[in-house]
Image 1: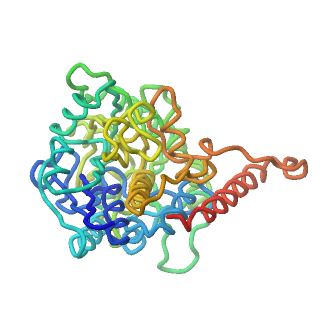
Image 2: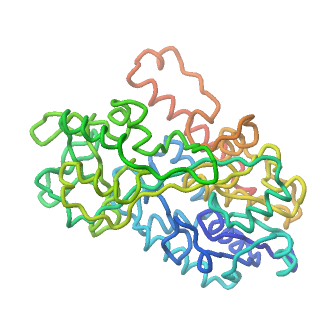
Image 3: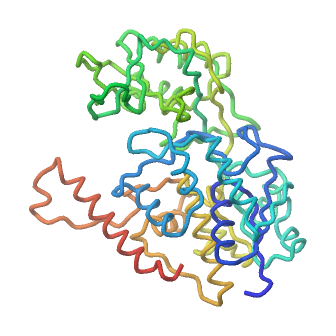
Length: 452
């Protein structure tokens, strides 16, 4: 291990967790972050680990796909999860955070680690930078919004295919600008807290049928941001802009992010549709519009979203936007340990590998770092069981014939067999199935944990 350093390019979620993991093993790390010099259009903070879309790291339910990842990441000492738990805001069973405090917590830990050297520069050729800092290994964890210089290098050197999809960001509204007489607190499928002063985690804006139909019509007619450079919009299906849902049909949003099921009004009646708002911070001074990522132009967002009940005089802290997300064809370009087929010392981690989501990205950072640690320790790459959360994600990006980013979900994990008795009750069958998958995943991970 003597004199072996690792260059980590990018201090997002994957890069932050990769750098922290390696430094924790006693490996010197050079962490390069370029956004202080040239931030991309989606970046607002100067600090590391910035959450550019939602402030939620998804479900904490141990039986969910994201629950599986959190179990594995916690065992690997994830800095991202540590900072998330420390800066958590109420969001039902989801792990949502105050994004500014979360980012600052990650930055402080990384900048103050004795084995991590932080360099604020924009990287072009990662191999040249590896030589410059005398690093034995390199991890590119620049996310889907990689700098122009590095993306040009990848296209020229790794090339093969230019794969991309577009992602969109939801707006955040100032809490003081809302009309609370038209809104109500309630978590989906959960009873309203009975204790005085205790509120549910979500604030809801209910629609009548006429209000909903008018709102969808306005979304369809509103001016949108066009795609650039003759590229076709290719959005991630589970994160569609609200305006695209509207274009797909009047009822689409009502069966997605605006579904009213489980959100009965205080009088017990169910609204025709509903917009859910999630707190951006513990103070509750701002709300994120859940599922409302959008392509609408800024003035149109203000005009159309003020048609949401209670939003008549809404003031937005920041508006939604769309951006181009780039990712590699992992199956063609990478080995299973996420090293480059052409340059064995070069690794990739995070969303650039073809996973989608915060926890997924950070998990790939931990995975790549753990494989490099094994090489430094003189060991062969570790084969992760496909039954684990990280193993399932890795298997997906390395076997998918038509690359398309995916988040963690039970569809990526091998099926389990239910007994005849377990199959009988359709209402409990799904829950039992998920529980079995989760139990098997934890068992599989625990068997390899000692190798990490």
